[in-house]
Length: 313
Image (cartoon, rainbow, N blue to C red; front, side, top):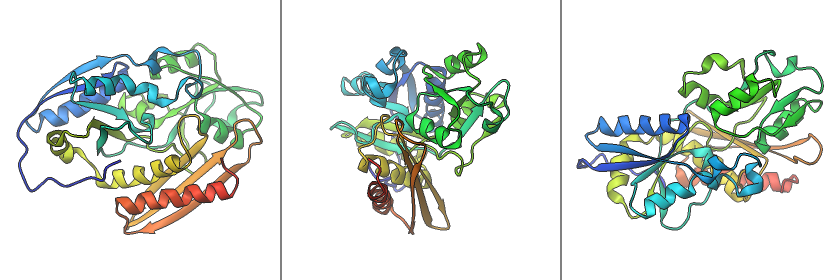
């Protein structure tokens, strides 16, 4: 991930920009949000809607079919072929290392990174009876839920946000866990019964943040996107993604990583659990004062090393 670079010293000429996006309601909201911000700065912006492999394969968990990179490959191909100029991603869906020739040019201001409890019957996870079925296809959420309530039955839940909510409403699950950010962006906050604080359920690396990908040689796009970047959010997610990168992270990694930035102190927490083993979590925490981008990544590597030393793999 490239560190943010200020381009405030010169004016950016208006560009004609095509945004590659998945066609789910949330992905389109994200792309339209970026479109509006760029149009407000004088650029001409259109959308190229695409269906990815990750959207098409719904009968198996992502960890078994190639990971979250399945959500970005087709968008990257559109960039490479010149059919699109930028791709807007939920950053938690973006692999830790992009293919050669691509770059993450912008991380925008982060929405709420926490997880949300959604249920028609039960106000909190604690209210569930033993053996109740909870839906998630995230290995991170699986190990965290199991640590909180080892008596529950965790079942796979795939599909876009609307599909997941429909499956809940059909009674397939007593409750499901979703990213609070997606629900808030789609004005579905009323579906949230409880938001887990970080002590209950540590978020995924990059959760709630939007990242914009470009071909690495497009300095014109890098300059155009610079006003959309949010430096504090970028520092936080750089530290989080560095933990995952050092752990060999993908969606097959039952890993949580969450950073906060206050008074020039970056605090990073991480947790790892064995999805096939006992409910015990391995955790680590550290801080870095007055961090820059390199310092954030250094902190992430340090946390990953502590997790490994404690038995995470």
